[in-house]
Length: 79
Image 1 (cartoon, helix red, strand yellow):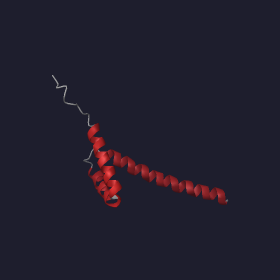
Image 2 (cartoon, rainbow, N blue to C red):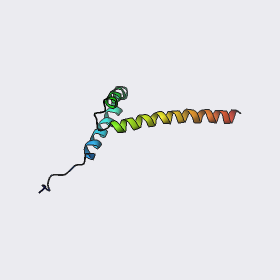
Image 3 (tube, rainbow, N blue to C red):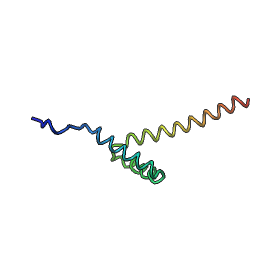
Image 4 (cartoon, rainbow, N blue to C red):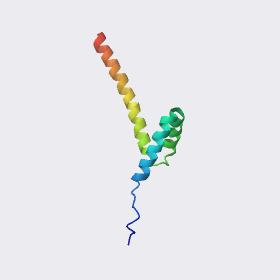
């Protein structure tokens, strides 16, 4: 029989705590933290690796989208 006083965790608490720590470090030391997160994502051993990878791809695609929209607007208004 399970002990009702011991909470059962599905890993979400650990992931949320790790994300809070990552954001805190990113706010205080952004350049060093970005370099460290690149290594964390490359190693793939952290629980936040999928989130880091998705955010990296999303930021890259957002940059490409911004450049394409800028070019389209310039061509539209200058033509």
